[in-house]
Length: 308
Image (tube, rainbow, N blue to C red):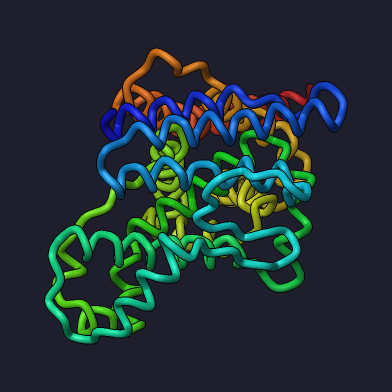
């Protein structure tokens, strides 16, 4: 199985997960079956880094499931930013490659080895980003909000997009290019085909509204907790098009309007879709969320003007 095929299948597993209905035991069983399904998909991928990009997509399921019960083996967990502030990094695929890189500084490695190094470092960067939070907020406070599929879409879409766009800066800050020459020339798959394009469309649309680069919007969202990312999307749009005295009144309506197309995307049955089609649908959902928010603002304005 190719990487794109596997990521498309794993995306369908994430979209289908039901974390709201049934007893806690039933919900946990569904989540653990989804974890196993993604592992089975990943095991069929020949390319190692494509396989790891699929396994990375399990992290939301592990957060939803919580710590495994004694004796329960959930397979490889590449990395996780746990709600209690603990960061888990897999030894075989993350910490050992990083140690190998530091043990032989300046060595010329083959492309396969450089890709393993780059992926390991990207996983560390990715998990560090999850813990970012504005002053007065806490990552752990988002555990309840995480049940919302839109919160999950934004959290993993933003973090994956930020990791992909800014990994080279992270490596430069660590002096990695000198330790592993050529590491900046190898490429990695981005993953999360249902999430990342929606985030890219959202940040582009919001950037146009606030007259800032899309990457600045992405930076602001990346620095927020999962729950605050969703609030941030809403208030960035409101701040651009609604007078300050009316923003609090308009916020719930705009939030609901923007939520709808993203919720559809986050739960869309893509089991028969290729990765490119999922990515296109995701980008469309991001654009639709911006359009829905602006349409709701226009309706709000008309009601204010007519006193209705």
